[in-house]
Image (cartoon, rainbow, N blue to C red; front, side, top):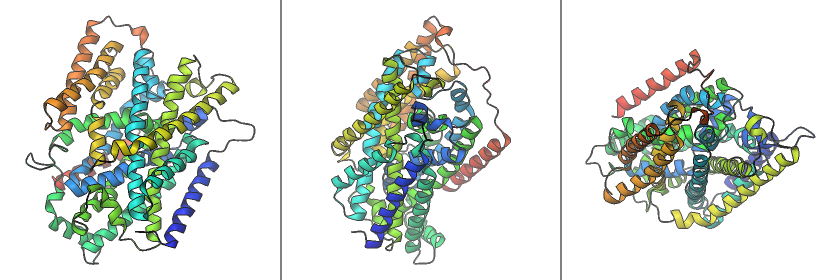
Length: 532
């Protein structure tokens, strides 16, 4: 299927507009050159609406839109638990994690580890995150985005792959995080409007033109098995979403690691004007997450009725886009491209941030303005920004050439990403939870937890291949936690090694935050009570 002329015009116009907007919002005053605080932390001045929108834009990309829609096609509404439980996780991050991070002027996750544990663990984790972001996350985003472009626009997939990577790189190369975050409100608005249009049209067709509500009722009758939120053990996809574990088990490990300790996500909140703005931003993002399954998962379930013979589940969303008329197709296609670009640009900036601030600058013994507001000379700051831009280019080139070998044979890329990441997330969650809330935790205990997480996950995967990976994450988390606690207690604690202060940190939140949180919880209760 090829885009019509008007569709092509809409897409090109959007690309020019969003690129120009990114450069405009990230411009500097005359005589001021970007320093590390400007480039990597948006001058620590992000408002709540930019934080909330940017959190969603960084998260919702092709791996979510195409991948999660594909999982909706394969296993149904149960996959929405990733979105709905994330909303609750965001509230926890805002109430309990951000006060500590912002009080201690944390700008990257490896920096927190250095202040809390020592100098060895942050280097290990920085290298790990760089590998994960480049070879898993960045590759998956542009690969799945290229699938959508190929299916909808008829463009050769390799051409689409390189075009997406190049545009995302150029989009953020000059402005850094400010270019990404301050334009994400536009990206998210278009993404949500486009997704709602696709959902409405697919449901309307299933309802024989009687509207989305009639279509939804018909869909639940035609594929009732796709509307079970908690899967039974005899369900063919129980291994992917093992029943009650999505509410009280391993999904919490994945969510806390992703939303609380993941650099390219939490970086937006760390760049807030203050704690209040950061907390308002995460609440805004939580409500947006509640809406995401309507935009992402429903089209995939609708495809079971409208396109039951797809070769791969990940073709569901691009196939549903073909229902759109000319002009509207271009707008929704632009929304999909927006999601890919926003998330890719976020990943690129975080890769550059970790390498430059946590490895390169530390190796040279430099303090940066991003770290303490003072930093090195103007020339050194300029040099570090140049290093960050160079690393961004290298990371994109690596991802472009490894995307097909790594993901070309995957049927459900979203589930592949979740399971692969699940090798590491138990250890990451242990390290940070102990680092935040248990002063006796030692660096050796944290390192053992990280190593045990990977080793035990691999052993369990080989020995018990049919054991649900989400349950495996929960089990590995408990074992890694026990090892970290035992080793930490066996060592002599060195309080002087812990530079993270709790002085002045409060977990009391404003009434508006509390009221909004209650709203999220009540909505979640209603959703699970309805579709249990």
